[in-house]
Length: 376
Picture 1 (tube, rainbow, N blue to C red):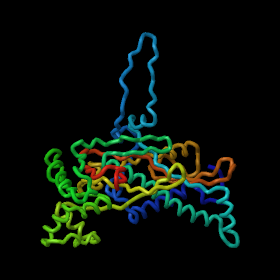
Picture 2: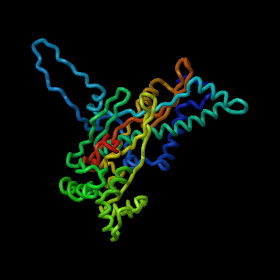
Picture 3: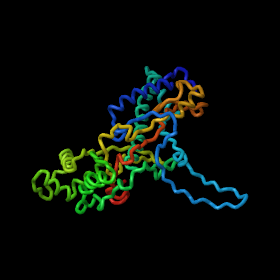
Picture 4: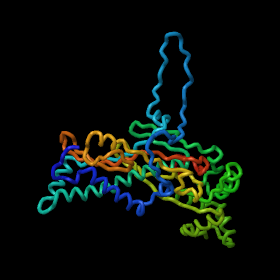
C-alpha cells in the first residue's frame, strides 16, 4: 500500500475495525430477511460442495491413433465444479477531482484527516450493506433452488441445490387471473399433501412477495374462504384490501402457517451506467419452509471463507494485514504511482450458501417470469 503520510485514516487495521463495528450495528438495525434466517459458518478450505451445478456436458469424442484429444474450455463454471466459493466484492473510489474538492472543503478551519475519516465511515457502512445484500440474494437462490448471475464475464446460471422436482410446483392458473386462480388450494396442496406425503416435511411458514400477496387477496377463492373465516357474506367490493395485517392474519388462520410478506429489494448497476431495482424474492415465487430451520446449521448455512486478499496482503507485507481473515473485510489502496492520484476503498467476502437437507424448502411458481405483471 502506498504511504499517505499524515493521512493515517487510510490504514487497513483502522478500516477493518470500523467495518467490524458496523457489522455488529447492522446485524441489529438492517435485517435482510433470508440472511437473518441463515447461520454463517466460518470455513477454512474449499473441500466441500458449495452448490450443485447442472451442466450440459458434450459426448466423448472418438480419437484415432496419434491424434490429439480436443480440449473444451469450461469457462468460469469450472470453479463451481471444483467446489470453490464465490468472491463477493464492492469498491468505491475518490478520483483526483474528488480529492481536490475534498481538500478545498477542508480549508478555512477544516481538518483533512477528519473529513476522510467521516467519508470512510459512511462508505464502509454502505459497502458492508452491499456485501450483505448480495449474500442475501444468493441465499434466496438457495431457497428457491435457482440462482442466476451473468455479469462482468462471469456466467453463473442453472445453479441448483438439489431440491426434489416434486417440491417445485407451479400453479395451474397464474395468480394474476383473480377470477380463475386458486391460490389457497395451490398452497394447501403443498402444505397438506405433497410435502408431508412424499417428502416427510410439514412446512409451517410461507414467504411471498407483495405482488403475489396482492393478487391472492383479490382472488375469488380467497374472498370466498374469507367469508367463511369471518362468517359474513361480503359484497363484491366490501373486502378491505388495504387491511394488510388483518388479511395476512386471515390467510395464516386458513392455512395454519406463519405468513411473511416481503418487499425487500436491491439496486444493481447495469453495464450502461443505469441502475435497476430488483426484489430479492422473484415476484412469481412463493417459498415454503419451517421456522425450526431458522439459523440451524443442520439445515443450511452460508459458508464464510477466508478472503484471498488477506492472504496476499499479508504475504506482500501490506500494513494492516496480519494473516488470513474471514470476511467481510475492508481495506484501502492508493494508486501505486499516484498517476492518476486516487484512493479506493474495498469491501470483500468469500463464500457460498450450502443446503444440507434438500427438502428444507419448497417453491411454488405462481406466474411466468417476464409475462404479464410478473418480473420474476
